[in-house]
Image (tube, rainbow, N blue to C red; front, side, top):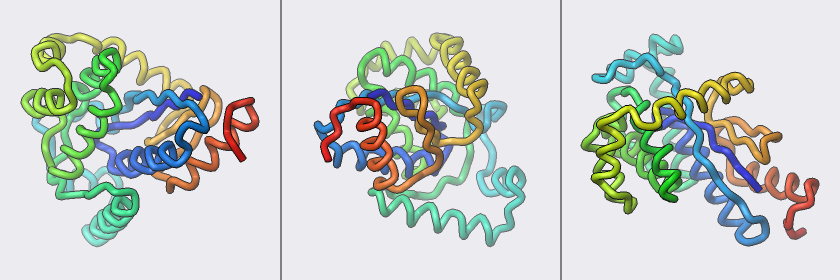
Length: 215
């Protein structure tokens, strides 16, 4: 079974959704062979490299009051805790394009899934800049990638065209919110759903499409 996880490092619900999906896949175990692919999406494609204050930006973009913003953050923290993700303080919103370029390259090295988790933890858990080269290189080393090869990617425009093309394809196929989980190129699940939702959907789709799901 092929699963595409369309998301942005800047998206807190993507951290919730990915952890929930990982729990579902762990529960399924060897019942259903799965290949999981991280796909790029930018919530803030025009964001300046230096970033902006998170509270001011989110309040302006979504029309939220300070009270609403605080309530949303408390809700996300609670949902994250349910799936083992610890949210910290995210004081700024940054550009994530270089993170997506590095993720594309990491996929070619067999370390994309690990790097995605590391990026989400760094930003949403620790408040680090997922667009900063030093942060990206440190995370690359953390997940076992060749740091000098990663540096070469970041200091060039490598994989920029591939990331832009992938983003355009997902948008052309109607993806306008993340996380979006696409199963076998046909079935869409959106949002930071609980593990039970992902597990049930994967098992049902596998059964209906001749997969190896057990009763």
